[in-house]
Amino acid sequence: MSVIIKYQLEFPEIKLKVSNDLKSGEFILDADIKAKMVRGMEGSAFDIKLDDLPLEKAKLLREKMKTFARVIIRLGYFGGPFEQVMEGVIEDMRTTAQGDKLITALSGHEIGTYALQSNPIDITLENVSIKEAVEKILQDAKITRGEITKQPDLDNLGEAKLSKKKFSGTLMKTLDQLAEYAGAEFLVCDKVVWMGRPILRDDKGYHPPKLRRETNLAAFSPIDKKVPHELAPDLSNPLKATQVEGYRFTILGEPKLRPGHKVEAVVDGYDKVEFRVHSLTHKFSLSGGYVCEGAAMKAVADDNCRRREKNLFLPSAEGVVGKFNEKVEAEQRHRPWIEIGKVKNYTAGGASGDDKHVSTLYFRQRFERTEMQPSLNVEVDASEQQVFKNKPMVSPFAWHKCGLVAPVYPGMKAVLQHNLNLPDDTLVTGFIWSEKPTIEPPKNKEGDWWLCLPIDFVDTSKPPKDDTKAANDLIANNGKRVIEVKGLKITIGNDKLKNVGERPSEGEDDEFLIEHKSGTKFKIASDGALTIEAKNISVKGDVTVEGNVNVK
Image 1 (tube, helix red, strand yellow):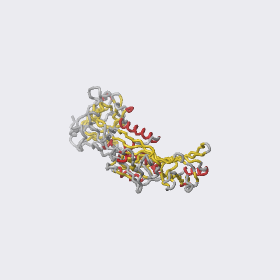
Image 2: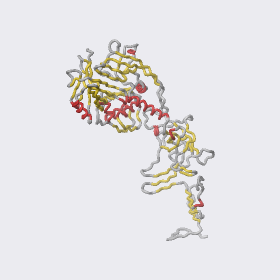
Image 3: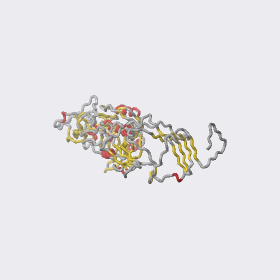
Image 4: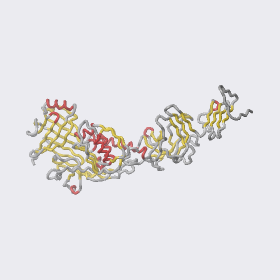
């Protein structure tokens, strides 16, 4: 095959083709083309510079960009056919003068990448595998901008099930999250979503040429990079250290070559191990020729695929931003602002000592990557090396020796917040019902305002049993109120009030007592006897008495 290179750019929306081949374009123009195919959220993109594109065509193309304008990039060699390298959506167009030339610069994303970055998703999935989730999301996605193949190419994603998870945002972000949960490599190229551990792309009838210095290999540099142990304190199975083995390469342009393809570099034994293209850039210019620059990575089928893929990214503005965001997210997981704890013990306000109305709590949950709601579904580790000691309780009203005090028992699942994100300045802001351990909410009805307190259960270190009695104070949304208590004592009058901070004493079991500061009492004893003590009793209205009456 001749080494004279050729290109063709087709703009379907304005029915225009340009090329350096007299038979392949309406206009014969010089061009500089870069088609970049990158793993992860960055996806595939292109940059094109055209010399002296006629102004009327540039104007027409700019007008079409207001709605939708594509470019199809085809590359090849004279004496052979064109091969499509990328179909893209033009997102930016700039025209500048350079000497006696008018340069039109076009940039955008591969049409599948564009579709995933431009279309939103809002879906809740539960108890599905990663494979099922990806397939469901793509099948249900409403693509109004760009194109994406509804059937993804998925390989070895495992059988772990997602717990209930709501996905919202762009399709690209959602699919990248799913790849992260699976520990899988992720690629969008040629309108197809690829995800695997690892990605193995084998196009029927195509076998990439071997990389040889004497024929097509212009540059070769080995990669041997260590990836440290995964520092993720909340994961039940953090990944062990691994190694990225591969190489960067520059070869003569190969239009069909894509990320995921198997490549063999006949250099220092690198052809003895299976390597797959990680990322790739097709570079074409009439002055510089046509080359493919990329990186290849040793294909290993294990849980570290994702980490190796991310550690071999090709530097770019989007890639650097992605790395920075990952570091921020990792730091937030190491120092969470909000986390879930479990009460170890509680010190009441009336206890002796300096610490009053505080809780000592266990902290840290460990869970699988596919767990989407650990706050409810995962136990808190009961490790004595992971304890927040004597942490204050947040209350809707807290003042000197007065406020609203709620009961706290060992085993309760607590919501913890860290003031100023300081790990040691922990606040107990509230409590939650839970799936693990099983802590069920009471059977309320909509609109209820209900305080339900268990009573007389011996082992307060465990949740009360179902036959435990409870005191209740309920106001329903129909305005009715119900009070159920073991005994009730009410005092009335300024002289009967205690000073702030002094706890009132309860009455007797099964007794109802109202005391007035004057000494008047209204009492129903545990046997049901009614006693009224007062200096004067006045009754207005009819009185009916049945039974014996004793007057003393």
